[in-house]
Image 1: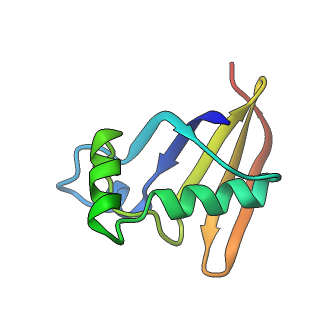
Image 2: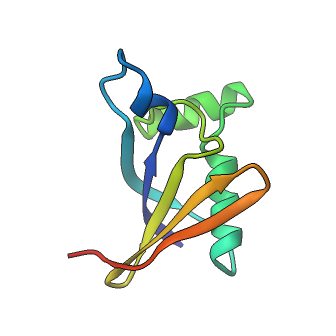
Length: 100
């Protein structure tokens, strides 16, 4: 499924030289539940190989690889689903945040 994904980088937010700290775009996600979707976002927004660098460049994703503390989310009908990346997994934050 293609989802409108949002990412907020805490590292970029705190970097005085960073012009951007968030990214939003359409991404094909795979997962049967919210945690699997989080895992897919985590995997897709980390630069491990040259292929990852190329794919993220095509998405105009210039933030650092996602890491602990970053916020990831997507739209689910009229609500945002938001998670914080933790050292071991993900924690849902702001449940039921309306999109409008």
